[in-house]
Image 1 (tube, rainbow, N blue to C red):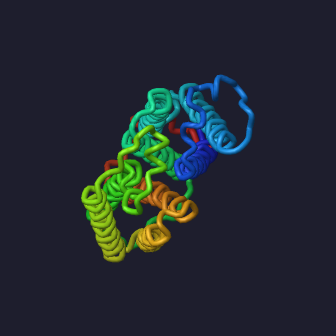
Image 2: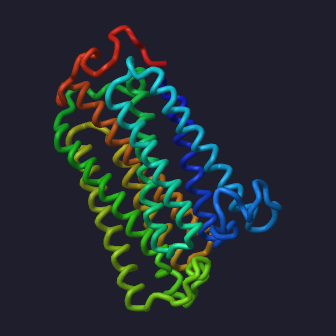
Image 3: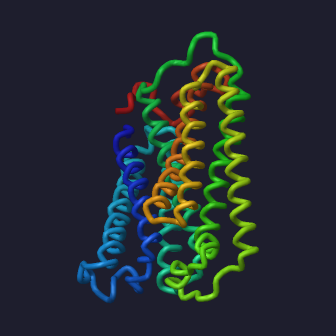
Length: 318
């Protein structure tokens, strides 16, 4: 298996997540109160918010077929694929199953808005697993630049990358909880999102302010981790541009959050903020996987023979 199909799937997952942000921002999640049908029909009248939600469902179906396609190719070629490829595909399929299940339960049972945070966490894990799969297959196919000669300190860079990736995921979950509990809207005395979940009591201003402060503190923690990661990249002479790009994206994402709040959660601003959060998660997965391959190239991580990894020695990924 090459990297092109995983790459297409990763892009499709990201696009689907942006579309999901629009569904949430427009409070269109329950215009189709049943699942998998929409208002009891396979193809409902495509107008208004129904068009938005139904398009999102069609995109979700397309992503499902892509993920299952990757899983099918992996199964057919399982004897020639390495263990990490198989585990990443399994992780993706598990995330898909969980996300479909949670999404269906939210719609059918009209679960509280805060439950949607679980959906956010699963979607981010799905994006990360397929990003890692794409990078892994790309590197096995000979993609990427070789590690700079004289570079060192791979262990510390590896640790910084992992901690930064974990901080990124945590910040997204905290931000998702802030959004889906209705705390963001409550700060502006609005409750349209919660009302779409049949919740008509807004969170208190104290609770909402605490969540907002926590979201900001986690953002600063992430920025600190990104600075540490960049410093380790400079010290080791590896992935300097990647670490600098990640730090810049973190700062831009923080600025987007400030703008979204200043505009009182304007739809466009919030969608940009969410899209940046998903991009950060994917970028972190890219960097972690790339550094893992760099360490193998330099012999800092145990390099197992092709036969031990489950790959045929004469197989070249395409």
